[in-house]
Length: 276
Image (tube, rainbow, N blue to C red):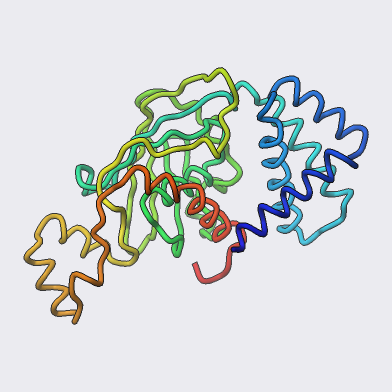
């Protein structure tokens, strides 16, 4: 329900910007339309969401500040239109259970590392209750709740395209530093499309296994590797199989919830609380 209100707010601001924005902003939108075509509304709305996030983080809600930030964001996007036409296809597997739990996903190449994390976590049914950190040969990038000594920069500050990834490049996403869920990410390809590829075009194209069980990494591994021990352990805990989700991967179901779960996780981490 909250996500619906946020999206409605973005739609309302979009209509106002297009109708009553400054002459400079309207000129920038016209320039964007020449390059982005029918994807222009999606690009503008992405710029609106980025500008809103900055205003909220600074606890400043002046119209002039917002419009100035939107102008800067749209100009930045215009410069990066070539990267916004690219897609990146990834194979993501849960370390230790690579054959049992994995996904192949297609995402825009021009997203932040934070957005990459939300997409991966959404694809594996994570609830966003814990910290995360992305690691590559170019550095460590954490969510804003991480202690600074754990990363080189915020994941939300770095775009995936800045890493200059190519086929065979490797990254990892470490989620829940206590349970130690690590997702290994391999780049299968980076391709240029004829049109812009926006976040809403993202999709999960293949996979295996339901996903993770929050706070129960040991039991998840036991379920796959020693099922009889798993049954004995949950009996000791006073639980039974009905307390766990054993659904297999279903591509249609996964894609139906993919973007909704993504937006939920973005809200959890970017409008964060101290409970993570």
